[in-house]
Length: 135
Image 1 (tube, rainbow, N blue to C red):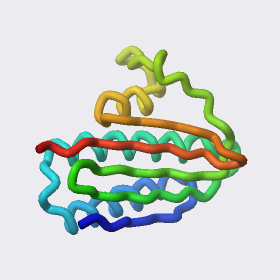
Image 2: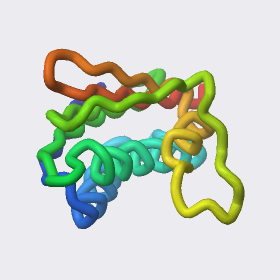
Image 3: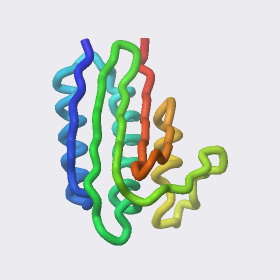
Image 4: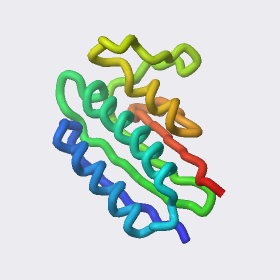
């Protein structure tokens, strides 16, 4: 049985704690999601949330929405925000050097999720993060 958990929050660093809290609620409601899937999904979701907080509202914070769904075959997160359009070419994303202070977010999300997608529609950014569940 799937249910959607949602969050609306300001795009500020403190809201990342709210994202972690929403993920924790999802795992409490769905203890059948295995630890590896939880960990990898959380990494991807938190990295995309960090990018939304850091970049979408630059220079002024914006509100973002996050919807989490746990399905029998996957877990998914959908972000939406009215921030600036993001220019990202998933085919050219690479992990920066170990001394780099930024630039890991999308690369980590791509490594830990099965699907990461972005689109800009009208004046909204939409991010999708999907992790297929272990059989």
